[in-house]
Length: 182
Image 1 (cartoon, helix red, strand yellow):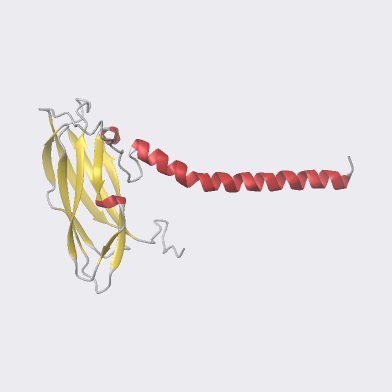
Image 2 (cartoon, one colour; image 1 turned 90 degrees about the vertical axis):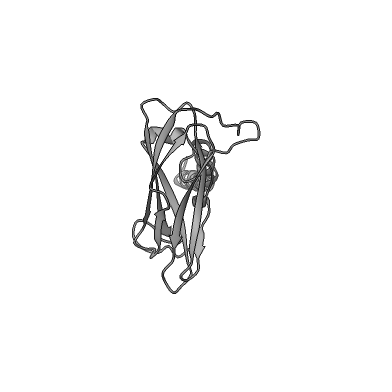
């Protein structure tokens, strides 16, 4: 095989590799969404079908602490309406947060959430949440933001307290520092 044939073979491999990498990168977003839908991670709730939305009520009670913060890129005031509340396992429940935009411009934010201890996130099922979509507040607007959830009745006995934390980020802000101008 002469040098020209070797070069063509190398170029063909590089082109196929580039196409494969592009295809893999293109497939990552849907794969990530499926992963988040299945695990409930990444700010997505586990989807509940008509057949399994019958939560099993339990007499066992767990205390949930509600935490609310705002990234410095977003000049909102954000807080839980109730800081701590007790809930029965398996019972559909609701918690309210309050967001206020004290600025003179409309601002859009997106919330991320975390459940602690991490093991509890497997049993904490959000059925509807403000964190699933971007939220726009007009100048000086305040809004109640509900989260609907239940805690699975098979929550391990050693978990007696859960913390649900939300952080709002300005839309377009990248946590690495700066605005994303896509």
